[in-house]
Length: 326
Image (cartoon, rainbow, N blue to C red):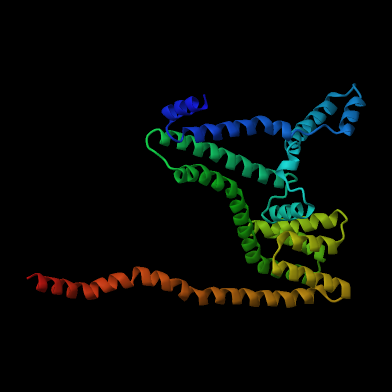
């Protein structure tokens, strides 16, 4: 009977039919069993809160509760798949959350959303590849290598696309912060020398550079708000250095902490560090200028030398060929 079924599938779908049918059945089983595997049992404390919740409520309270419940429901949809959408190891989870924060995604569910996008894009493009392979196999014969490439390549591209996006976003954000930090440091020095405290200077710099350098302004704004909330300045500055992950910011934070610890002048420390940042900016510009000839060499060889050789040697070759041909 299995032979008859196999012959029927091959007659209907071609030689790749059995493989496509097995893959489709496997995906269907995954879709059916996945909700049961990822189902999360309700917490006993949540059941107790629902049982002890008072019945009489005002309209305003019901409205607020409805908004909170809708937000909670959206989070619960991700919480059901929490053990699947986020690393279970604490170190891996901390590293993933730090990477998302450095890329600018500070939401509570950013890691879960990242892994959810990986799964959805990978699975969706896998289905697209299977459908494409099915229709192509009906018009022409495909070997196993072509089938594997047509199905697995889109799935791999969809799975790694969020990783590439986050990494690219992280690099772009760090470059923007690096470019804006010297100007922000000069403005902070002016504010401190004008008599403002370091906290006031950070808040003022965050307000002034928001249009030109929004990424750096966001970091300074977080520092200002955390200090106003009562968190220790040393811890706030260290958190900023960890969030950004740049050597310049880490050196700045270390300088400010040492200045506050040993009682030295903050204005003097900022002035010295600002001069160092100017020197670093000049060195970066000189480094880019020095690497420019090397980068231009390949383009020059590819697009200049071949036409020049044709112009110089072409007539001679044509004359030789004409002489031997005559």
